[in-house]
Image (cartoon, rainbow, N blue to C red; front, side, top):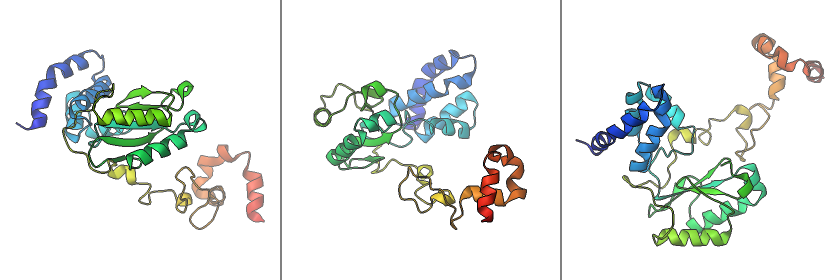
Length: 246
């Protein structure tokens, strides 16, 4: 029996109890993935397949749901998963400086793990604790009002095993980066044509590959787009048509 098969057998009573709480078994998807992650340290492919089988769902449904959340780690990560909020409130309150300090102290970047497997680092979207910005989560536990001094104390306590938040189990050594192939789509060139030459990831661009403004292209290709965009373009079409003509 494989290690995962043994774990699945061990957790079966708890899995059954979780599923029984819901009128629709599908509603147990997230709690089940949380359960397996608590024992493996990440949401392993075997765990996602097991959850799909238990709930009679396709694996695509489970993976697409899990991939939506930063609450789940789809590759082995460090014993301490450090997720720093880069939402608007945190950014206005100094998140960029906090993230730069973390990267400096850890010697790693976004979606990377230290060579000793102790820390994984991720910059995430709003964690919904805007009144305590700048904030983060350590193994999904909130830490608020971050300062460089707090970061120094936190990392020192983690390195000596004295931090208040328990480390994650680590059933598999994490790689240097815990990105997945799907996550690299944008950096591999899977951008819209208008963003191909944009080095700043938050800038979506505005021009097509050949320099034509995308709205101009839609207006010019009437046969393809007219029926779907008429309502949307009703207020701007006359002005844009005149501009194109000029």
